[in-house]
Length: 334
Ligand SMILES: Nc1nc2c(ncn2[C@@H]2O[C@H](COP(=O)(O)OP(=O)(O)OP(=O)(O)O)[C@@H](O)[C@H]2O)c(=O)[nH]1
Ligand SMILES: [Mg+2]
Image (cartoon, rainbow, N blue to C red; front, side, top):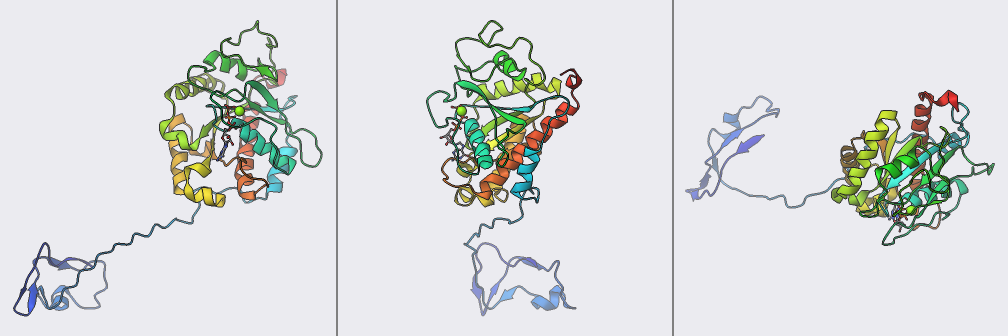
């Protein structure tokens, strides 16, 4: 019922309060009554009680904003363990690119831990004034049972930072496969063909087949402009090649209190849904390419709620890389 029987102040005259507003029942089954006989055709009230609703109950909608595949961890792992790239390729290369401290090395450690069945810390991670990762690493991940390396590698780079940034030509040298494993970055020396270890004629096997922009979900509102410009410049170059790009949105536990208490709420949290949307807009990528993940960093044991989102992101990147390679004109030449 829509009604506003009085506004401001009304005083009792004789035995009633004289209303100064109106009643207009709407969307209500009056069962044969009308306004006139319902109100007695007047706005005279013998008693007036005013209630104010003071309690605002914050209800978290329990419907997930993203549905993950309804398969067990074992199935996701097995997809990666049995994966073979098309053509004569030995492996697929996924590049982790992001700001200093965004969680690149921790993502590799997370995926490696999942396949080792225990928490591992092969890549050095932590916080430092400048990038903790100073060496380019093409990390292999061994299958849980067979101990054979997966045919998907995670390529960990030095973090981007103001002043000591790898510039666009350095990043393109990495993407085009000119850098060997364990190449030590020297921010004051650009990557050029005359530096030791530079691969002059990289094959498709050496090239990057999917780029993962690693973004700290707590930094999205104050994302450094210089790093965004670097991302955009890379995107501009690789869009021409059709190279797939995704975002790994890390540190989701820090971006939402509910998730920090219970990681199983990741795809229910509206705060995380909003960060995913903002990140997609910032990098001009569809939301379906933005993967919120919690890296293993504080845990001593594996947890399905951490493992499944991380593994899902890894499977998706591998599938995108595979799609790219299947459509790549250079595939038959390697
Ligand atoms: N709470 C939380 N901390 C994280 C997460 N991922 C990474 N960290 C922490 O963030 C810090 C930086 O992580 P790294 O993996 O070293 O980041 P990086 O991008 O490799 O950094 P550089 O190599 O220095 O560029 C470490 O202290 C990690 O423990 C996460 O999902 N949640
Ligand atoms: Mg690192």
